[in-house]
Image (tube, rainbow, N blue to C red; front, side, top):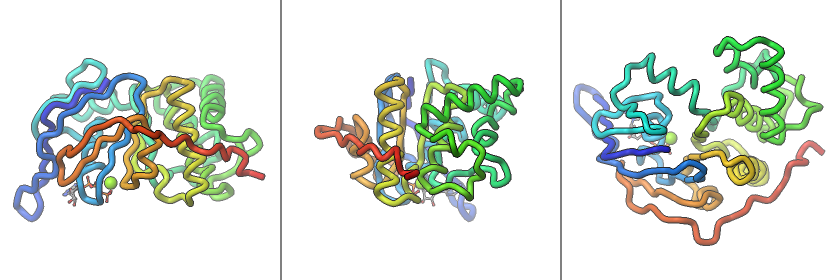
Amino acid sequence: MIECSEIKKSYIVGGAEMQVLHGVTFTIRTGEFVAIMGPSGSGKSTLMNIIGCLDSPSGGSYALDGQDVSLLCDDELADIRNSNIGFVFQSFNLLRRADVLRNVALPLVYAGMERHEREKRAKDALGSAAFPEEFWHHLPNQLSGGMMQRVAIARALVNNPLLILADEPTGNLDTKTGEAVLDTFQRLNMKEGRTIVLITHERYVAEHAQRIIHIRDGAIVEDSSVKNRRIADNHHDETK
Ligand SMILES: Nc1ncnc2c1ncn2[C@@H]1O[C@H](COP(=O)(O)OP(=O)(O)OP(=O)(O)O)[C@@H](O)[C@H]1O
Ligand SMILES: [Mg+2]
């Protein structure tokens, strides 16, 4: 599904060119759950922005689901992104004044879908993200961190994307709540066959994936399957 070949990325900082990715090559197949791991500043988010069609590489090629996207313009990238990719970030990025259901349905408003269908899809996505029904009409600030992250996961799922990209999704959560979120990702991968790319700087978190791509100073230093994969504890009932 993801084919990156010799991806390079540089930024101009203070008039000087700074190369952040130095030719990164890997493929990710449909249905894989891959962690991208590396220290702060190693280029993880830069790589995710490229995989997620939020940014274009400065060199190399990137094909998503067989289509070369490295040469598309911003509008074309936005279309690809909206129909194929669900994003989950460290900060949940929820609308404060909108309840849970509206937050999840929001991408469908942009897609021009009618209200009844939007609600139905949002409820299905909340179910997939193991979000309890009695909180559907709460505002984000009435929820725990773990529940806010499940809302963000549901919102990422609502368009039924090919690919879910998560950048440090447990970064703001305590260990136990983080486990519940990792359990949600594992279920989405194992039971629904979703392709997931999870970015983290923590080995413990990365070991919940099937495979870890290690990146350091903008280059892949190791790419291997996880031998003793961690299966997240199920803490779905954190609402009690
Ligand atoms: N828009 C930008 N302009 C200039 N430099 C940038 C830009 N984005 C990232 N960088 C630089 O590129 C390098 C890699 O950044 P990136 O955000 O990809 O790291 P990261 O691995 O995600 O780190 P973290 O774990 O802290 O999130 C850093 O040195 C950063 O300062
Ligand atoms: Mg980052």
